[in-house]
Image (cartoon, rainbow, N blue to C red):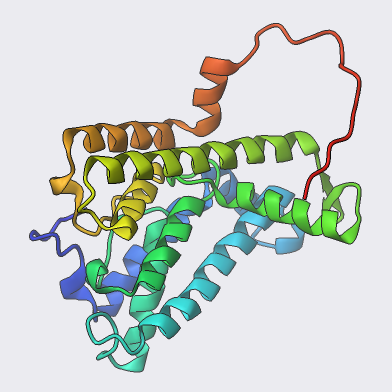
Length: 273
């Protein structure tokens, strides 16, 4: 979103605590999800009484603010083109804003083009993860990623079930999470390949950033949007549409079988890993 002209977003307010904190807070609240907020209100904000969904939302949201902020700060603290010349407090402020915004909004307080590639890739990961279910955000969603991580952890521990907070998550939910992840990976890989084929002069990182931003309907860009070919613009439009409508909605609409099979095929093991 460019409200100030010249694609500057909120860069001129980089050192304004009120604007930074207010916008970041609104972004976080908008990415929590209406069901989670309602659940917190009903249980008077007591963590132990919250349902499993809300607990996962809060843990993932907090983790995706704290750890990426530390990483972003460590990467960019010596970069004078971004936060290198700022006082420590304002470096932290800018770092927080730059990791909060990619998950659901399209604002920035530093020039994104001047970031190190590591920071750009960090933002790509945050954009792909996105906000939480039933929120205004796009992306895979925090709970989707949490379910996959929990499934891996429980499998490594040798647990037959996906367990957390004395609750069991069904494998049907895990299957849905894996479908969403697979569709996301397919869209981003296919979109990046097609766009790089249409214009070999574009930087791979810039294209990947553009595609991830489109999938998560974030709105951030490294400045290549206006120079894309017509084919590339169509690809970006389709990816944005898919990201906004939802992976499961599109896949079920085109590939769902309305008459489920009444039998099961014989089971046979295969070798993986």
